[in-house]
Length: 513
Image 1: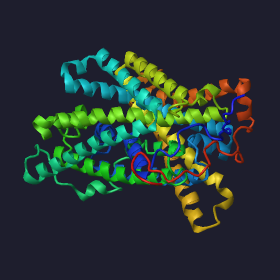
Image 2: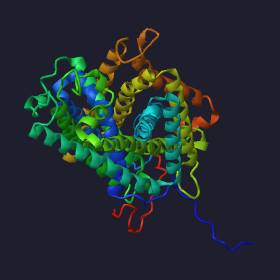
Image 3: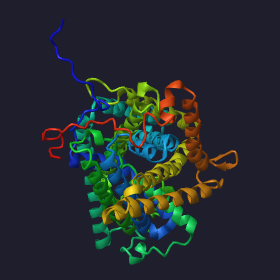
Image 4: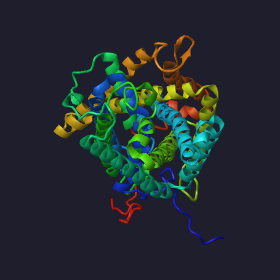
């Protein structure tokens, strides 16, 4: 008989605990938004949609993000679970709404990974051999390699991923600072291209939008560039203080992003102008990638710096997108909302090994499939992504209000942070979802038409509808019954997360809880 002691069973999911502090969580939240890539892919389209009102569109889009961040913070304090929206919505509204909330997170991750891989592959070859950047097979193959590499890093653990993100995020912000300074100097010294203009107060006028549909479209596009900060909440079980640090990191991340995006937008508009020719931001040929259009004119022989920044931004976000999605499916499986295999945690790396692997494979298949069909179809997925984001963020806001309904008026804090702010954020995002879906139905919206309907609508609504089908199929399996009967996860269910006190060890980012 062995004299080795048997460890008591863990009540958690098996993830590595205490590996992230406030700085590390914020870095991952910022990296998940891919600030350089997001601006490159979105700024031009926002300008085409609302012209000079692009800066105020970014500010308005920040409002619901900031409000929903408080919903995440309050729910995370009460239920620090890596399932985030799935877990909270299930506890608030029951299994069906909760499952769809989890699906919304998964859909958003799957869609954006395809676009991130495409940009990463294209910019890699722009840096190495520009001629190959036009070769679809080479770019797609490189994108697949990036997905595989980032899947492996995510599989190996949050420490290696967070250290990598520190470096990659530093490169991105260095490039953005240099861009803003160079643009400002060029405008001030008169060396900017024809059409350059000094920043105008009217750019911040919220009443200058020419149409309601353009306003909604621009805000939904701008919401996309903020999306990703909730990754730090999905890693809550792996932080030094799961109840406080993730919520603080989420709010800090959104504020940093606001300053970043508005500052870069103003600099780009002032330098390039809003003209419809040349480097003007009103030129449709520049819309898909503003930085690519401006890099040679603004940076000259140093243009490679922007190329590296966009590539790094896309590749780093690939890794940080895999993290929350894999942990979301891990939580769903832990509570029997998915097959139990998804709850497998690697015994050495303490990561959701199977979920991470599946996420990488599904993203690869989706990416390659869309590339084969049409690159225009791939571009439409970015426009459709806003629907999935608005969908699960609004569910989270409503879940906060309903979960805390019995204590909403117990204090002024509760009224403001558990009722007013989350509810306003959820209502704003719901309105954006509805109005955008109506606009997307138009065949002229986006780049593709499917069955006489806008391809953006088909991708956006169709991907959410697919979730309903998959949920119904899982409902037919015997293993799903505890979840759908409300037994494995309900309001009273203790969270499957570590609850023991951690010693005050230094976290991998060098900070303390």
